[in-house]
Length: 100
Image (cartoon, rainbow, N blue to C red; front, side, top):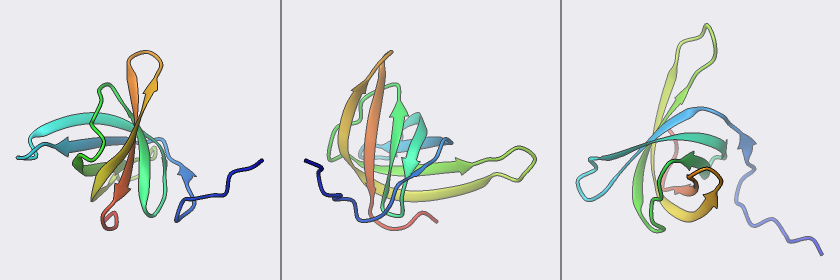
């Protein structure tokens, strides 16, 4: 039996670089790659785990060959972690506002 869709907005494939900043002072920084995104969140791959419930700042760099890079920012909360092969971790983030 098919599960009903629980997401608030549609996800789209997105393969770009991102940076997560977190901890009490916002000084912990982690490089990641996006797999998909929506208006309300995104799913990324990173080389380490960020615990569920952690508040993060996301910086997303949209790049396409020959065009100027667009940099977007958002804050959010880690909703879940997924173990991935080769020492990678999948990180699902729900935005608290919009990317801007």
